[in-house]
Length: 104
Length: 89
Length: 163
Image (tube, rainbow over all chains, first blue to last red; front, side, top):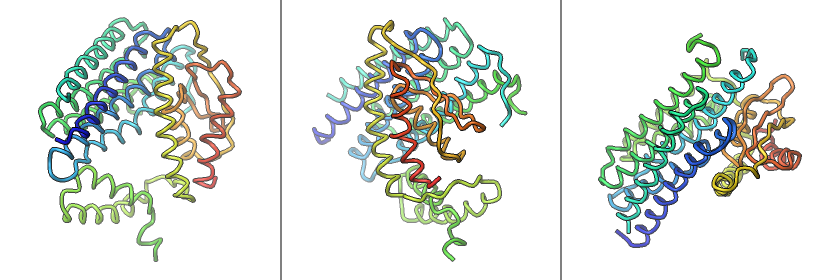
């Protein structure tokens, strides 16, 4: 494998795993539920995003032909992460205040 | 260099998953536990992708995609249950 | 004619790209099948697919997407720094952002973007008062954050969907 590509793949792997770790540190360390929500929704999606880019680049470089299907995981996570965060926040508000949610 | 990065990546993600597990056990509220499960799931996706690079096999990709889909549905179902006391209305 | 063949050009394009990505664009035959599906599925889905606003300015959308990716990178670094820094210095806050857009789909897009960028998670869109409720991890100056969301994200979205 081309050394430049190897370097980029390694850097993306390290960046991704570091952000995944930082997101989880936020989840473990922050003081209340709503602040904890911030760590995973951002740091983890970027973590997986960088990891998936590393995988796409690695398989494109080592096999013949493009390897793009990893991108689908990233797109899927970027669409679903805000929805999960939104529902979690709503559930937490509901439990804290006991507020009746208006049906949509 | 790549091997070193992969090993270090395993260490970071392993630590991240341990932290998630800690939050899952500690709670205190059930929403914290769902959030911890969701994060654990996303970290597991990262771990699978990393395994795929190390094994130089694209078979792990399908597992990662499945995990992403199932984890999202699980989180939504759990939150919906908390909000309504029912999953299907 | 064009309307009848492609009722949802953006949806068709998205379906085709997703198909190409998932199948790794392996051969011309799979791409052809993807194109066929991208043509057919919007017709089949038309009765139950909600009416999305028209993508009025596709090129603005592309530029906007590039800026969001950049903002996300910066936001991640900022959030990471706050997460490992001293927690007592944080100013978490619930903020209500009054919206000028009046379209559920555009509001969803805005909410998702807000959730993915700088230390903010959108919690609820009030569709009676059109207010976006946001939780910020560190907002010493809530008004500045409201201005930023409105200028950086709401204004381009209104331009893109012309609503």
